Image (cartoon, rainbow, N blue to C red; front, side):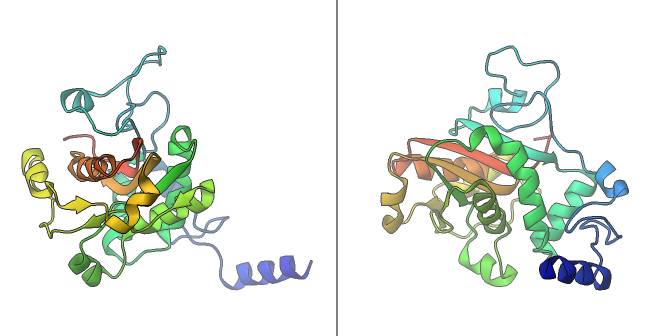
Length: 242
């Protein structure tokens, strides 16, 4: 009773705000109607490889988008929560570059909903790693925040340092698919002290955005080479033109 009164008093002093525009909303870390309408959540029939929406209905067979058919993925299944456009793109950039770390918890709710079919078995969740120089500059890894929140919400095991980026690579924005793959070759590995946790297990790799899939490809290869039984991926946003 006392806790409820305290929560009511706090909500009156500090009303909930939209994570997109800062306007008032009815629940903590939600979206107002206008921002919600401009976030393109993915639902219905999706590509089994990356989660991008597909036309038509499922027919019991594995469905993949043109990109995943052209470039077979080393991971078995993938899901994306939203399209990287409109308000969704603004939220991802705010989380990634704007010190808006509070967005991660709400975004993990969306990711949990999208990735629910993948959250099965003795799954180990890990983030796409940042090189230490970029982490020092940014002060946090947005993918690590998402992975930690997703693991907490799904009550699954989480290993934030399962993967390590051992070689610095330039920013991938604006690079072609081939350039991305060349830059990321052998840049990511599983540290020796973590190989015992990964051997024979299914791993879910979490990232904020998937464009060509080069980063997730490098992470998946590292996990499989370290003995993972299977790799799945979950990303907050999917770029549809790759």
